[in-house]
Amino acid sequence: MENTHSSTTYTKKEMNGTNTVSKLQIGRSESTSIGFKMDNIQPIWDQRVLLCHDAIVVADIHIGYEYELEKKGYIIPSQTKKLMDTVSGILKETGVRRLIINGDLKHNVPTGSWQEYKEIPKVMDHWLKYVDEIHLIKGNHDGGIEGYLPHEVIVHGSTGTVIDGIGYFHGHGHPSEEVVQAEMIVTAHSHPTVQLKDGLNRNESYPCWVRFKFSKDDSVGEGILMPTLNSLLGGINITKGNYLGPFFKRYEIWDEKIYLLDGTCLGTREGLPDSEESV
Image 1: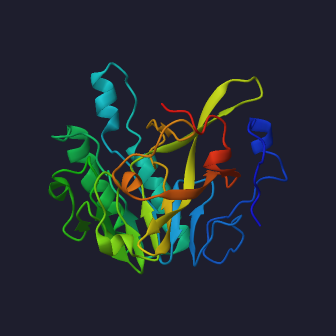
Image 2 (image 1 turned 30 degrees about the horizontal axis):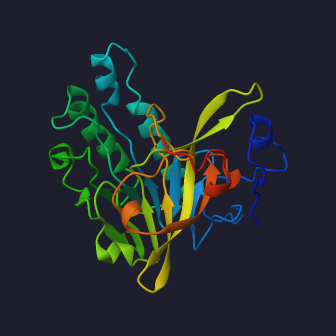
Image 3 (image 1 turned 60 degrees about the horizontal axis):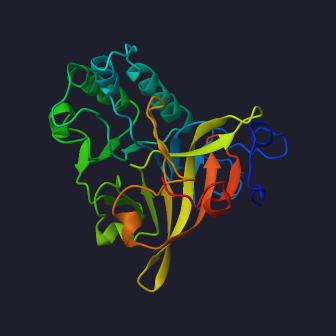
């Protein structure tokens, strides 16, 4: 049974209450997932990583983002090793043999930075020590990404791909019909966050997962919208704005359940404060 909040305001105290949070530790044998789990598809709570059959899925890594910030006058050390170690640690813990990157491995467009040319090959070589396959679905920041990657990495176009019955696409372009007709779709690109009030009545933004349903022909599809792996990135406040990308404009979306990274279910998007206001 899901833990949900029915009120229209949420505080930090409520979200961290002992009776509202159910967590899934890293591992494939656990079964408690507060209603998110479906055939071994679920987030690894307290991480920005999806466990999907024999794979883990990450999205919106944006290696090279620090270079853009540096050009704007903000000096931030590279976070790439931290991201690399997070993923490799989860690969070791879960024992999965496949890594799926659902778009935006790199950040700078149209040309890359010295940071990306230096760090991306090292990261991929490191992850290849733990898995048999790495799949990369190209995002809008991944132009020319093939030039950064070891030849072992399998690159898919922006229309996505189907792996073990699950359709993956980044979200900046239209997914293929094969992806849409998959048993479940997984997308990213929107950098979803939810804005909530803390105990001092201040607004704070929290990255989140969104599980939703959508209409396709004469049937109902199910999907998951992923948060960013890179915590430096901003996001779309889904309590006020719409998701990004043509998929969400083309298909009717409903029953959008919102989950914080720790597993707290906030209920449906319609029940969140300001959910019907426009940006």
